[in-house]
Image (tube, rainbow, N blue to C red; front, side, top):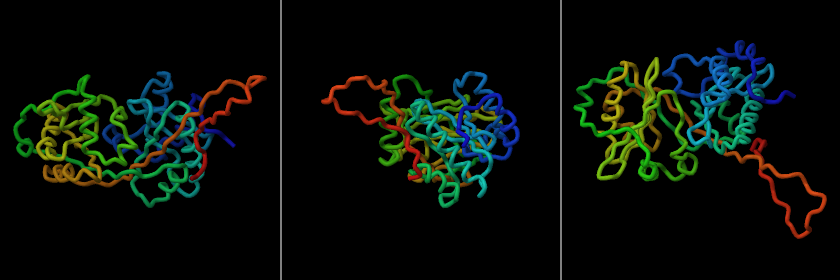
Length: 312
């Protein structure tokens, strides 16, 4: 049986054949236009896997692509080919299982994915590999946001800088439910091209964080805002896009961010769809020295943690 392995130049025909027949699992990518798997794979290969999207291949059958987060201890699944149907279920399972093994050995502790339908067959395959849901998010889109609606710019935001980590940790802890905190870490910020980070500070306390990602087809905004300041600060965050090309703006709001959802609707954003956020925890395979000829009988054997390959 074929094993999942890293992309090589010999896999170009496979990605060429299946490149337009896969499933994109990264809504943020819409702002850059069509996802081109072969271009992504070659770009990462030619830069010796230095950031960007990486690719794992199941010989002659399919491939899966992912992206590391800032900490290096977490990653996101962004694309799987071929597209989902009954005949590809086994391929998806093996690709997912293979990626989890490969990334676990590269010290990734958490593997994330975003799926549209919680009750879909695709979700069930992820669950069989060990993924579980931990939150939901809604995606909103704003096409033409009037400057009059946003109001005057009061300059309440500044670029994120060194030394903000503690304040951001306090903000994150104050607005994020404990079960989500146990899964996501503030340092696990997804890495996107040209991303810009800003914070709002009052009386020495950070009360909002904005991550802006400009694109060719649209712009993306991620916001974490203190519950008592959401409505006014959402407008401040959106003003940051005024210096960019006028394109649709996409923004996510978690199920527990009621104030953010209300603020987006009030400003004129329209609801697009909802996604289930899932995660799989891994443990890296420990490296142990070869057994010595003589070992003290008093020394207890140590367990070696490996990545689970069960369907549980």
